[in-house]
Length: 375
Image 1 (cartoon, rainbow, N blue to C red):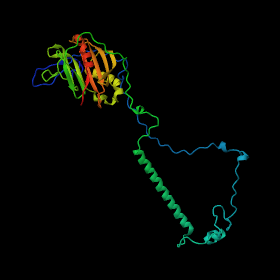
Image 2 (cartoon, helix red, strand yellow):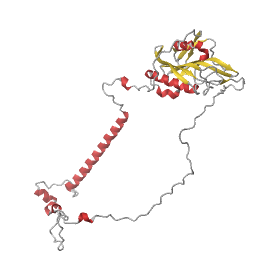
Image 3 (cartoon, rainbow, N blue to C red):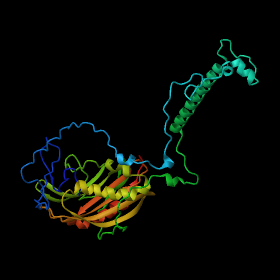
Image 4 (tube, rainbow, N blue to C red):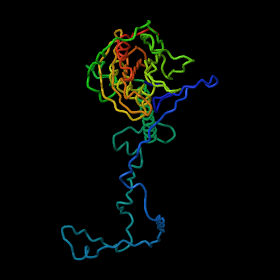
């Protein structure tokens, strides 16, 4: 049983004040003794003063120390270098060393060099720059062309990387490229039992265009929520309510609901293949929202469904609890997720407390007669 006004508990407060049309829920939550924590929860003793910050200490630079013993002795003559000879006087002019080598006169004269090398003395320019300047300009020009070409190739690769689609290896099937369904721990696969007794007489079908489902409209004691009874639950587009207990203005009830998947779980839905996992996640989400009090859940069913050729999955549990002032101590709950061909799948939910176990067959009927309708 789930109601917008009953998140932490199942009692719903009903008000007759016509000015206040909102439903208010008052929850009777038994006090639960919280055990003392086993470990330390705070620090004992006076607080320690903060450690003083270390001051910068100026240290004079120390000259690197060498172990002179490493350099004592004559050493191995095999690795002894030649002793440098001290210059006996000023260098003699006309004898170049390796540092002041001079070009021969015939090489300095380009015409003489061409004649010695057997080349023509014809010049390639009129300003006296000669072959050297032409080669310099040609080399710079080639370098510029190479840089421009390299930049063009880089830009083409960059643009191509943005526009080209991801390559698919040959032989890979389309199914391999589909996103994998979410990984959840599935309960044991087991069909929902057919509860003993006769279900409530249906009065026709109700179409819920938002969820894309149609469901049976059941006769009394089931009733649709209205402005007068204020039994509606936010977030569901199709609803029927079964009031099972009434104490003053407080109600305990069962429900038949249809709607779409909670947006918080939208990322988990990856198409028909993800329906089983999403059904388990949706069932846990509903329990967290509408049964936010101590309870236990025993799995009853986890089975595939086919709704007008569409893939679906059912997850059912039996919840047990003890609530102050409530005669019910448990109820059957069932969650169905159906691939309706839309971006968000359809969700159906049913709950009936054990005080009205004779109406448990209505859950079987509700699930079995779900239909797909157009948008």
